Length: 354
Image (cartoon, rainbow, N blue to C red; front, side, top):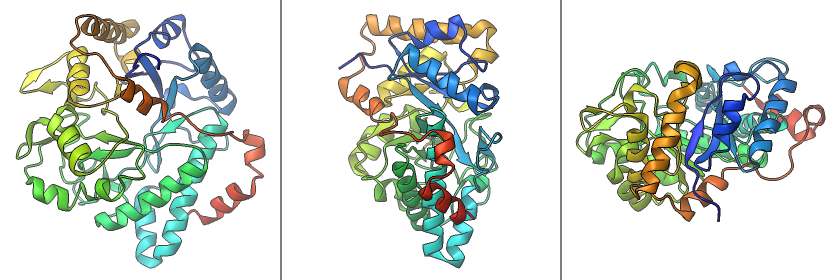
């Protein structure tokens, strides 16, 4: 087993620079997350993914590609996928049609990404649509946890048919709070009993299907003073212990405001990464620092800081965590784009989308 590589990094442009190649070749780097700025067209994206894989064939090429307003690639033939709320609305009219549409959405999403060389999308959102969260909003399937679980399972089936793993987010639930954890540290004052009965219920029902889970940068003070992604109680005792989840836990972006304060104190990216790993996360993404920091210096500081922490035995990583990372890589052959466009299952899936 190779060394545990927990870091997921970003790049600034549409091709790799020498600095990108050096960072991606670091033994602690396990993946790359792509954004709209990394997209020009399908040929460029395919070349970029191949270039990333030439640095390390087991680097995980990731993207936030959910449908609706969170879809990084939208032109040059990519299908405009509906927001997940559209599937929830269809459920209220025809539940079986909605599950078929969700499977179709997952297949189209996964197959199109794989045709360009992308391994993995951070989807689906399992948050409940409580109606007050601007950051979640129509990204959620429904208010009813049972409907969320059924539609998410159908969408994950479609991803699986395309050879793509899934990521349920944001555990135990981000839909109740109004604050945006990109900009603030939201606080949800409900009890553990209430959270397990409602928002966290899909994670228990889907524990045989979920490949990975992303915890929320939200504090639930009646359970723990730390945000869920930095809480061993949430990740080890509740998610793994009570809810039976055995896949990869992926921290939400360490650059978000909700990750920059722990125990009431501002923390560095290295301190945030260590806190997440020590709490039970297997992977830690740091996003947008290739463009936010001068020359990506924050990325280099994180790589060096985590390497030093490992040398001092503050953090060691594990074979189990590395196995969980490798399990997120795409599986099976991917159809090239021109062949995919005429594949029977793909064309059928397009017809089923709402």
